Length: 443
Image (cartoon, rainbow, N blue to C red):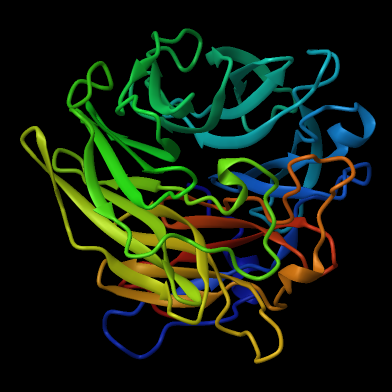
């Protein structure tokens, strides 16, 4: 991949690794505000991101749609791009555009780069009583117009879609459909899609926060579920034929405690109004893949980010015991995202470890390394007090001040972290580019 920005980033070096043999060297770029759209809404949350060489694309929920277009759901998708490795960004506009649909609503964006070099954008779209998962494509990172590629799913209730890509045009999407977890796949980069396949039980429970990852023909879906609004169980289903069929859903783990919201957090109404708990997946390896799962578990006055690893053995998955990455009984660590960087993993999350006795403060943190030996890095130089960031209750009926996910994306040894930041008093999207140096690198 292109390395032309490394010299610039080196000038912004903020931390090098400790003097232990297993620690990593990480070069960080500056914190950069991505949501630079001057006509945007007060609420800008839930960023998705992708990095391809020196191109970084970020999308997010923006309440401009609720303000200017009177969209009932209150948000549309805005996007921005950097062509200099994340040093600066230019806003690209909104998806769907008002020219495309009469109600340009959208949320829950997801960005990926295909094996052929395209960038795909997935978003959840509302039109009256019908919801759909739309797929858009930038055929080349330098393009400025997204083309509608296809409709991955459409039903009366679709929620929280997650996307993964593979070889030979394979794209898979998992999502909540009514009270079940469903899956669809495409074999031509999202142009046409299979029929809905239900991968969970269909009993009347709350199921949401699905994650999807694949390695060749092995596909894993993981989600949270529980009775009522209690998302206190982790479940999974496994496929050996590229998502054509899945194993019977199996419980991975029951949480010791459900997740309680940190002070100041707000997410509207409904089952997810208390606080969401998403499963985030990544996959490393080739013929012998390793699936990496992160999610959050509650504690008496805090929460922890948990990491679990799954290794396929025939048609079964062998799960490791979960490991605590961050958080404690009195520190909140929430909304983790995981990505693979060659032979290492990275986990992004919010963390309240810098709080005071009188004020709960949140920062974005990154843990990098090999499982069992991760190093924590603070990404934010200014902490945020969530109670002091109101969001946009007037134009966004789902009154989120920080959304319910942030995103970590990788391209080999390079990565980008995208989160919602509140240091200005309003929710804004920020990123930080970083590069992991190889073990034999020297200064």
